[in-house]
Image 1: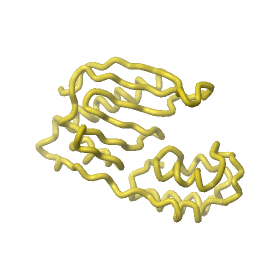
Image 2 (image 1 turned 45 degrees about the vertical axis):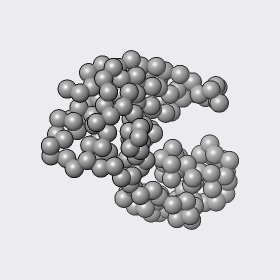
Image 3 (image 1 turned 60 degrees about the horizontal axis):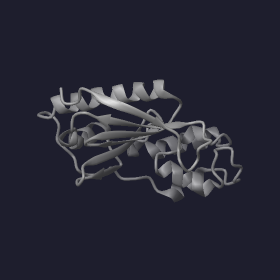
Length: 174
């Protein structure tokens, strides 16, 4: 087992201290740097760096970045959700490491969705129901994995389906 223990740090955003969501760092007691390219193959990161090793992906509606010595997760409800996701990720890291002989390591980022195809499907009313000031900002947030199809209430059912289809190859789990 590569990753055995970690310490959880839960905090509020410094730039938005009144936000309801919290963020967390899981400070890893074991270095998982060598597992990162295998984890990238398994989970499909959209941002991968070699030095220092890290992979960022979206899963369970969260942006997650795995570094050699810590895991960062955004927009969590509470510590319980943080622990649940970190424990899931711990299992994923250990499983990828255990099966590394069967997995082709990847240092490549997945292709990222483009803003304009997303924007074309949005209502373009700038209604702010998604929490963003404009549909353009919302579209950028979708490309970054911060927002998802479900975050645009006025999106028609037909365009929801089209947007989900567009995002599927990018492994943004909606």
